[in-house]
Image (cartoon, rainbow, N blue to C red; front, side):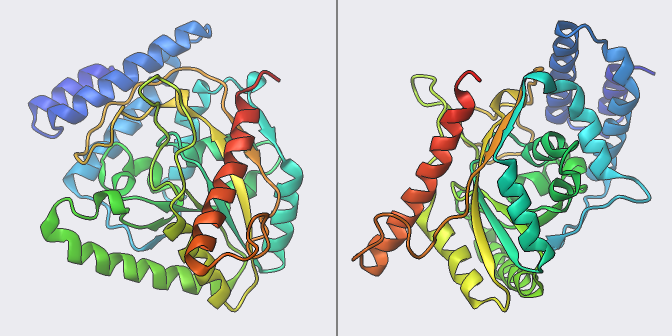
Length: 333
């Protein structure tokens, strides 16, 4: 049975709310159009879309209980492979670029020594974890697979995102943008975040971890002129990771990562609190650039600053490094 027919039947049976049906149909239709543009056919991917629908319906019926630290699930169903398999046809690999692979070698060496790596990165699309893994799939597959992502509420609550999230290592935290929605859950969310911080401290003390975090707290979005740029980084977020690293029993190294993945699955123009956002995709090249290690104590411009100014300057310095690499990615090779 065709995917779209199954969606209609699920709506009629009240298994699938209409807002999710609309989102899934738009994703499917734009996926189909994207494949036509590259000479492929949606018929080749009907089976994986049917699996996608089955996973979404299962999530709606019985939501998966994410722990503060969620470990990727690869059996009996391989959620990691599912996420990559569904998105792989959309990536134009021959035009995609990865810069700074030598820094990945340095980071892997740190992890192998049971030291930690924290990647300060921008964030552009919901499936950025899958985009990273796809770009590293040939040369550094385990580095992408084992990465831990600091994830917001949306990707562990939206039924359309959950099947992808279940295949990743996640530290599940509530961002400041959604802390007070709804206001009656604010205290509960704060307690949850405290548990996540304790779990993160344990992971850093174990060592051998690579953690991705987007200090902007959300995805990059175009400005009023349609220009897409790296969203500013929150000094408080960066400082929290810096302090936790210093308190850890293991050495922690900090690096940058710039992502250019926006066209793969652009976010809504504004931040939405409700689940069920529109998902429109296209076939596109995607790019990323790993930067060199960040001198967290002695970065340029850190001299003679008081504590508050130092935090702000550190965040600006890291943001500018990511923005510089991002601009390199947007230039023609």
